[in-house]
Amino acid sequence: MDLYLKDKVIIITGGTKGIGGAISRAIAYEGGIPVFIGRNATDGEKLVQELKSDGLKSHFIQADLNEKDACKNIVEKVLLLKKGIFGLVNNAGRNDGIGLEHGNPINFAQSVTENLFHYYEMAHYCLPYLKKSEGNIVNISSKVALTGQGGTSGYAASKGAQLALTREWAAELLPYNIRVNAILPAEVMTPLYESWLATFDHPQEKLNEIVQKIPLGHRMTKAEEIADMALFLLSKRSAHTTGQLLSPDGGYVHLDRSLT
Ligand code: NAP
Image 1 (cartoon, helix red, strand yellow):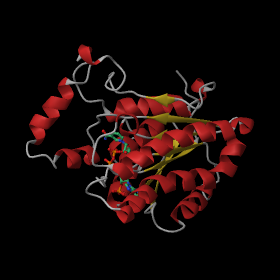
Image 2 (tube, rainbow, N blue to C red):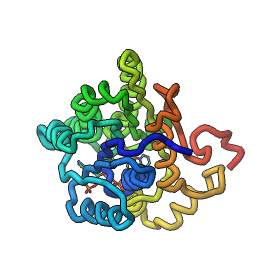
Image 3 (tube, rainbow, N blue to C red):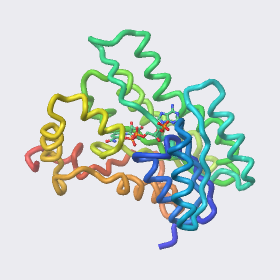
């Protein structure tokens, strides 16, 4: 099936590894041009070379999304490719464990700033070019926005706000035919997930416990399965889908608990 992504420039924040890395690869293999953003230059260049060795196009921009003017500068650099901007995948984020009881207002504000603001900034600076391309935005949120987790108020608030902004932007951008959708991963093995698991005394036991509660197949969702959902949302194949919050999670969040 042609997803009509050939030569389309799509920005993926945090697109060098984990879920973002899988989305970058998937876009490249569909003939699109992923432009991935990350702080670590080695990781970024490695991915460019990996894709190049398969004859695929991509670009890496080294940036810390939390630095002043980073998002504006990223968009300016992407425009130098002279191919416009067709898509934005807001993905970079960190479950930083700023809780209610064991957090404080300063750290909470910082967590929300770091997890949420660049989603808005990237969308804001990409907007004039998305209007030209009638492109679209995919926000990567989290199941935590719906279920809570405990001990992570800043991250949960940011992830919830990303869902609200998905609907808000979908509504605001209707006149431009720009679609906005969100994906809510639940349990996906990535560098971020591994570091979260490592905070438990018995990580393997914790993992076995979680996996047993995932109804479909009793297994983790693969990053590639999140990427496939993102590709469909980015593609004109989903031309009448907007403002949707999708959970590719093996039924983890929405199915009856007695099924596990
Ligand atoms: P990950 O393995 O930590 O990868 C995150 C990526 O973001 C990396 O490429 C990292 O690269 C980049 N990044 C992080 N902060 C950045 C910043 N300030 N500026 C630029 N780049 C930055 O994370 P992941 O598990 O794939 O998570 C991706 C998204 O999915 C996040 O929004 C997360 O909340 C969400 N999610 C994941 C899960 C899961 O099970 N894994 C579940 C629910 C939601 P550098 O280190 O080079 O900067």
